[in-house]
Image (cartoon, rainbow, N blue to C red; front, side, top):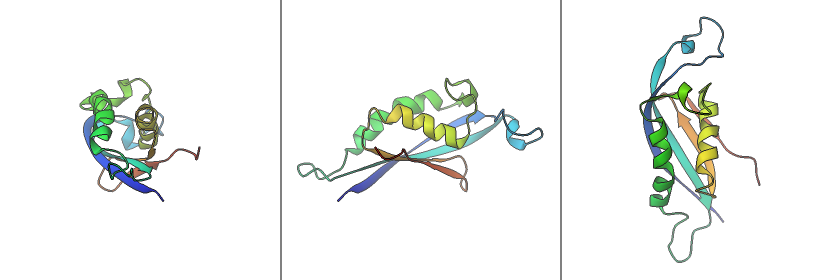
Length: 122
């Protein structure tokens, strides 16, 4: 039996998508109020009664948020083409070493557009 928990984070950032067709609106510099969820899945610890302490999730993710908040994402190393999909993968690569039970990253760049990233089963 496993349980999934998650914590939400947000940041403000500008970007443009350099690989879209000519004239595409996302080729122009624009910004988003990004929100993302960090999901962790595992058994409930018998002693503590939780999967992971929410504080541990926050401690693992906040330094990464600091690399993104109020920055131009195209200039962040590894985000030359900062689509939601590639941003979700970028977040996973940086968070998973600190949270081995990481199971999903959900990135929202608007209220109605989101991407869910999950790694292949181990």
